Image (cartoon, rainbow, N blue to C red; front, top):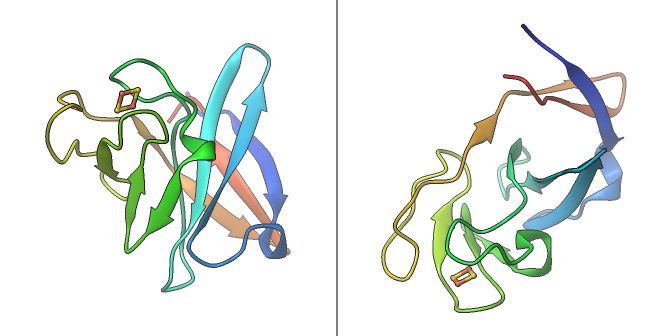
Length: 105
Ligand code: FES
């Protein structure tokens, strides 16, 4: 089952930046990579649930603002202590100038 949500306009996230996507009670994070691709993950760090949209996105990595844990935001892979559990990732599509995220994907 898919549930595509229009997250934002393509030009609303700078290259190498991250933005929040809030859908009801859910928090996701949407990334714009230096290659011009968009990605989406869960919005909370798997360590102690800090909001990743407040972290630093660079070179395909999101660094958590609380304890500096890092994830590969393309794959969701946790890159080492203190983050040991991977992030969930979501399919992303770009159409007509907007970024869409499948929040059930
Ligand atoms: S809450 Fe993210 S590294 Fe601790």
